[in-house]
Length: 466
Image (tube, rainbow, N blue to C red; front, side):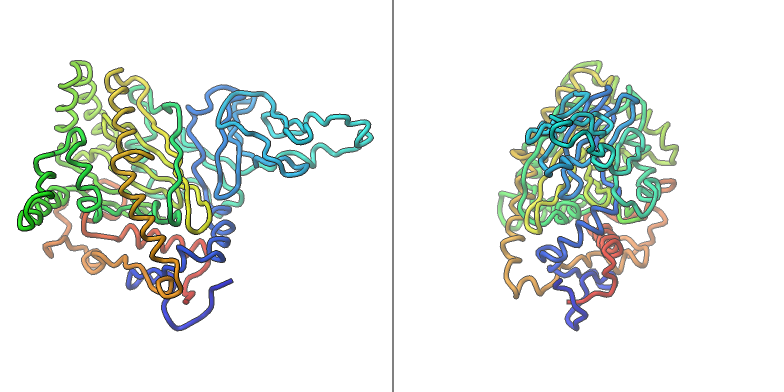
């Protein structure tokens, strides 16, 4: 493979924050990822509410491996390879459904919801009844759940709780709870293909808010709850553009990001009730039930987290390696996406909306519409990211460009010294009691640095150079 002990630079340099562009384009590195990252990591597969009854199934992927998430007669979720052991034909050709058995369209082998081979056409004539059916069951991954989230791994190197690490605190606070009936899946998934390596999306959501006021400036002016007057200033005279941007970023500086070992991260967490005020404005435009819900929801968050200042949720996050989050707001639901690799230069995003079961109907309608307008195939924000990733992919194809590095050094000196952007100690920040290492949202890439440290550890490439 195209990794050698050379003298140019490290693949991942945690000391400088420089990451080789090779890891985003190299075929050999991509193939190694399938074995060492996607085969050995816990991967998000789905939510309990997606397969509620025995026989419910959905099709998805673990890396490049097609799999079926299927709830058996015993009520247990199972994850099995979606490939018939006979000739490798894809067994399940449906996105989701309910069935007690599935039959291969090639030669008719039939498997039940426990993955057992239960039917072979012309068994006596073709195999004289001697086919060992137990040896031809569907291969199954190990499955573990956390608060309704279903994960699977082929050869996990740790327990699911160890894998989630400090992310568990934030999941407990905003995703894995029972208030208002708990979160439930809103059918169905949005699926779209993106240019560029899968890690571009994962590190974008793990904590890249530096790009937000630049890449998404035009989107903010037309989104509900945003200050359209402020954002419209980006279209005015050059001397006023910087003033508008500084004002917007200053508001963002009231928010925090958190690096969550091992290799996870979230961002845009506020503690000043700014999100509550925004949600109340939207609720008042709907109905009195929505207003009551917003106020009660905020109170329940405070009761769950039990911190001095109440965190209002995180706008974005990544659970290593390829599970991303957006939302947590009363009118956003929880947008959970899986980033599926499709070769070193392409990936797919499959995203699902989780909403509180007992949220008012007006809130559910608003959340579904609002989500579709944001990070989706035709959304105002998703297109911005896709265009950036496409240009990154186009400009990193050649040997000169791929020999260079990406720079994730933003805020490194301040983060290492536990200082804010003004050079003051971070001891005064209102983050006591929360999990993770905090940083100011817009001017730190510590979450990306820790993501790539984790990636390098999983790949066994510490110290590898190109």
